[in-house]
Length: 213
Ligand SMILES: C[S@@+](CC[C@H](N)C(=O)[O-])C[C@H]1O[C@@H](n2cnc3c(N)ncnc32)[C@H](O)[C@@H]1O
Image 1 (cartoon, protein in one colour):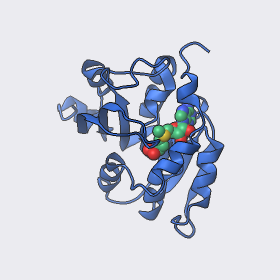
Image 2 (cartoon, protein in one colour):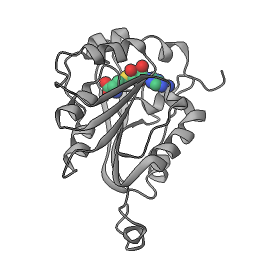
Image 3 (cartoon, protein in one colour):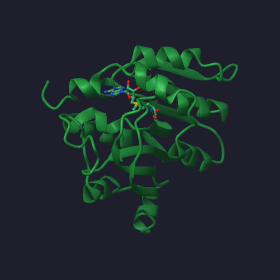
């Protein structure tokens, strides 16, 4: 399929889950969740084995967790830190094919670049369309100096492309970070990552008042 992630990106994520096992929730997710006065309904796109979903559940959120990997969703369901009576719905589904009800929070940690340049704009538009007024997005995008930027089928965004995506949101976090750290699979990698927390305005009046980044 044109512009689909290549085999190395698409390969099964079992070794990723094993390498990332026990890691804490992403700081972007924690920041976004902490910005709400009370828990609501969250969608966790590319949830993997649920490091972010479980944090939301722990904080009392209702969570729809979506991942293309049966292995990831299976591991989420078997986590021993899932709270009792967790309000969790978990789906094995590709994000490109997924839809969901209006949400207070859409989280997508380290997954949107994997959608590729063709699907990314549609999914980005859907995220915005499904965020309730006052809702938030948390997640990451990859920049052009990322070690994977020349892999076939990844959606890569330079600073100006990222800034265009922020239109209509209030920017609560835009950290552009370059670092050299091993991947969860233990491979050396240069990372060029944009960490985002974005808020959907409560009303058009806020946009008109110029409070939106
Ligand atoms: C790098 S892992 C990130 C997992 C988790 N969000 C985290 O931060 O640790 C990427 C996850 O996205 C999932 N994924 C990749 N492409 C996907 C797609 N097109 N639709 C749904 N899930 C996808 C993988 O199965 C994997 O669980």
